[in-house]
Length: 248
Image 1 (cartoon, helix red, strand yellow):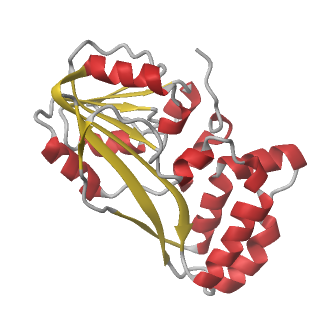
Image 2 (cartoon, rainbow, N blue to C red; image 1 turned 45 degrees about the vertical axis):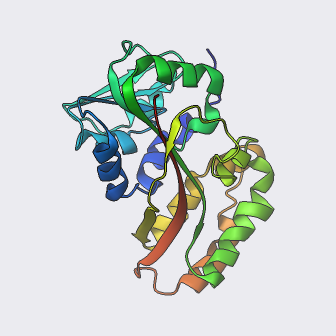
């Protein structure tokens, strides 16, 4: 099965520059789970969520169709990385306590993936899918960032970005919903770290490939001026949309 690969070409940049998910999310998910034997992180990318799950579950199977992305993932003894699509995993029937998808659901064939989740989940198993879109720092910095996000690379976002912007609210969710708490997703970053994050966007990479120059350079001077001391760490925050449900 072919897949839309927007990240393998800059997998190392993606690994270093992406924000992490809050520890409280994984603690809460583990608390909802009837068992903690096996978690499946589908569309795991470079293993950010997989690593966090490994602290709460005896075993984690982390799958992604991109061998390049998995090649950048940090290893743990209890994480089994597998290069395979989310819609057709090698997991056994009714073997998984928790299925997670972190910032990847919009790339999946949902009908096939949901069927796969129902196949591999144990009775009363948990499915948790989450996403984040735009970020906020300060009003002045945000204006610089928005020029990049909307005006410059806006046309280079893939159409699936609309699903991210909506927080997956319009996607089918064939599970008995569990209302999660609100989780704060924040990073304390220097301006260099923030610029690296802007360069990790798939739209930034597509713009650069198409036009042969770095669009971040076009806003960098203004952003540096707005940031102030380049060593000063500012809080960068994202709204995290989390959808959680139980297999009935």
